[in-house]
Length: 394
Image 1: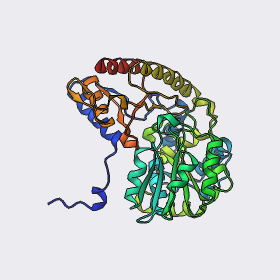
Image 2: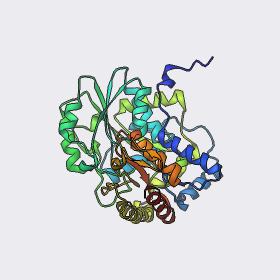
Image 3: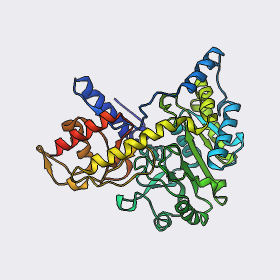
């Protein structure tokens, strides 16, 4: 008899990973699937980072690493925070983890108690709500729509706060919408949070370098909120290092210490070679990765133009990351090729089965009117995918 814990039974499967698995399954059956479901740059890791990793292997970096990361990597992270974000962190405030996902999980595990509430401005990254569930907290969704450029207002934020609110998670540039909160918008939201000293802020800035003209702003740069903001970042997206699995936080000392303790019992230190490579990535000028951002910018304009030509696709202009999040609610209630579409999940599944294009339902991100399409794919694949979508819907 299977007797799994209530903990694992309450945990949803990651929709992005589930869609990628379904796409792989169909591919294995010989069906030509174009995958636009994963948030993974299609570039190779830059040579100078690979060279640093190879050098680390030659130099015998093969022992257990300190739980919270190598001292010189933590110094490089502090310098990066200062250079790119104007943030002053000491190495004792930094914890390096096996990907930003672990960083977020650590923070939730050390801050949240059963019954605490976590505010999630929607759309939010799929794992936020799942990790909050794992920490036995309750997710409170603050909705937004394409009409508001997927941003929440200070009034909405204030209305969602209760005596049980413990944490709010912001993500800008946003996955799945590509939306960026400007400095002025963050200052307005910050004014609300100033009134509630017991609420902590997690700011997920993993896409900061992938932006198309809107200056990146870190919430921790607001002096009133610095002492209760945890800044999360990593090298996966901007440096095309998804599989290297390095994320990190800058946080108040006592939170960093607690995350170190949590990690010490679960994974210990992150991969030694990946950490050495990360030093090279973070110490290099940001201009070293500009070629990838320029390429994403071209693809963004192309995919917006192509999808805008399909009836029923409502588009906005995302300012960062490498996703579009079209509103496709026009199709709800319609029957196409014998299939009735009642939700974003139906629509996403229809595109997989009929157009052979993998996308992700917006339901996974707290928005049932949209689907997420990644343009971290080749120009040829993007063009072919949109052609197939258009044909299937015609």
